[in-house]
Image (cartoon, rainbow, N blue to C red; front, side, top):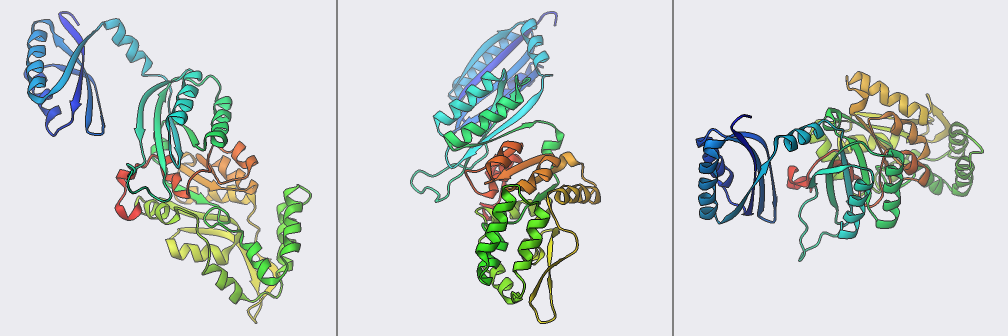
Length: 409
């Protein structure tokens, strides 16, 4: 560093093609070393920062030429000397843990961003960057079901991860936003397998309830479901007893329900993007294979594991099931099995579900997301989405709307 200066250049003004190239042309002319560089563009307004190392004898010429170029380009440029101690302290901070805090909702306003920023501060973290993942919203032609997402890149060690998670949950209910706090590592950028619950996740219905309504036994089925929810009976007993009540139902009724399934908001977009970018997709459901396979054919899903209802030779349900029941424990086992078959590390897996029997796979996956879930599931899952459609999962994976084709919008 003998006879050299460290200097931060800050260039602001209207963005235009070739501006960065012009600046770099001057720096290259004087053999300037670039220690760091970053650029942001908001509404065609540029903010460009460059940390340079330049010899004492050349620094004056660099500053003079840059000032002339700034005047020519009609931008502002300022110079800030940096000491070696300040630089080394900055380098030391770069070794700290990095996290991504993603915030989404129907809209994001100042009060919500202020609350999240304050939480980051209270946890002793520093914001390195802020990026908007959602597309620009039209004021004159607003989207009917708008979505907004901002991603904070933060550095440091959280004071208390449990309290951070609790505060994000509190904000979800009070400010109508959802949050995801993830370690920024290679696994976050290389997710490869995603497993979904089906009922009340991919579809806005519980199929067994729809079957029960058609068969005239809804009240009996609902009573068994309520007993299971109170913890009086386990999932296996609840499932077995409810299946018995469906005895005699014609398979044509199942076909009619399948053809009129109410798909969850954002599902078309989500599946289009996941397939385009090579994700392996699985349905792991406590529901029925008949409906899982219908969804599989519609979206080209790779795996379906659910419960198979036994059908007699006349085309009616027998009231029994075939094979092993897919409960919470089985879902977690299947996630591990599919990951092994696909040679995917568990940290590269994602699980999405809404019920208590989804918690084992949500906790097993590298990224577990509770979707429009019960309070207990939201409290125990790593991330949750309650404010927008299921395509909000894409934001937790780091996708920007601008990356995606218009067909996926």
